[in-house]
Image 1 (cartoon, rainbow, N blue to C red):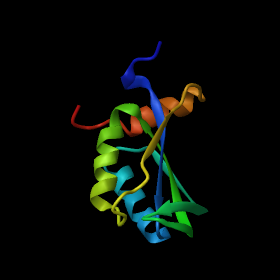
Image 2: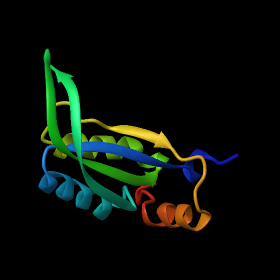
Image 3: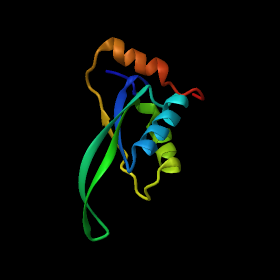
Length: 112
């Protein structure tokens, strides 16, 4: 069984612009909270304040050690333009061992 410190996650965050997603991705990678962030355009349909919204957004797919999630969440909330940003973490049960090792080496929290 893996320890928490050896687990990796994918964190999904949506942004209202490509620029916001790019800026936030760079902050996360430079801080070594994430090893890699993919950014893709998506169409989101959701209810917000009683109204159905249908808009373009940019999805950040963040690969990181699970132990970094709290700091990723804090960083996203601090720098995000939305009052309630999507921040969803999904545990990765299986992956290429070499890729998982790379994520853990690159994105280990420096203050642990």
